[in-house]
Length: 85
Image 1: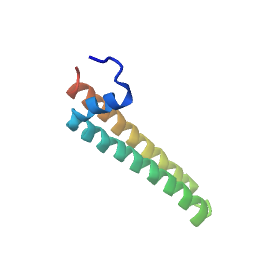
Image 2: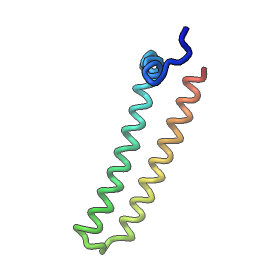
Image 3: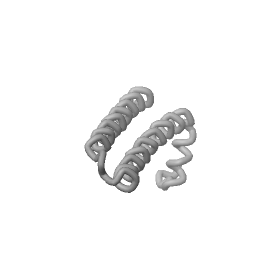
């Protein structure tokens, strides 16, 4: 057996665990969506609202960050439990 699989060999190994890839991608997409919402809130506050509601926007961004952190911790916990190997 060739021990030097490289990136493509690792990807084939990951593809063999199809459920893990789907589960991981679901959480990565969720984190990306949270990040996009954070950027949209910042841009709306600065360019549309001219910074009048910056405190509310800051709190919203902090809450989105905490939500994303909880989702990340949840994904790590379930992935480590499901695919210990």
